[in-house]
Length: 198
Image (cartoon, rainbow, N blue to C red):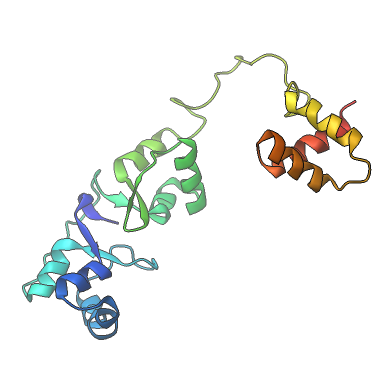
């Protein structure tokens, strides 16, 4: 956790401030540094530290104590966010992608979310309250028979299939993707659906 959105620094930038190459820093200086200054995300492969603490260490002055307790401005990584929401870290990343959670921001390659956003998501989980999907009884009309129903590319796929003889479906899809745009995988799906649609 980055307490209260405090400025942070990674080891490459610490080494630069110390005036040594990062490889030298990690070999010679980092072990002693890490004993005195704790990483803000223990167990993470990316090590970041509180900027004020790192500067105090480099200056040989007393290392300030980080603020204690929870604060709405704390920045949490996906594991910490997952622990609060009682989901997995991958679910947290999915929530952010689908808009169920704020997008967060990236700090030295670590994606973080403000505690206030996480707690708001906890109070209003996906599917409940604001932003929770379609209200009951508000259907969108009859459901499609399949995902590509009404898609004009389905006819193109059907024509290509009928003219293909023994050509492998993957080759047909690749040719259609080059000719009409889209991915080969999408055209493979269209061809599969065209072969099942009368």
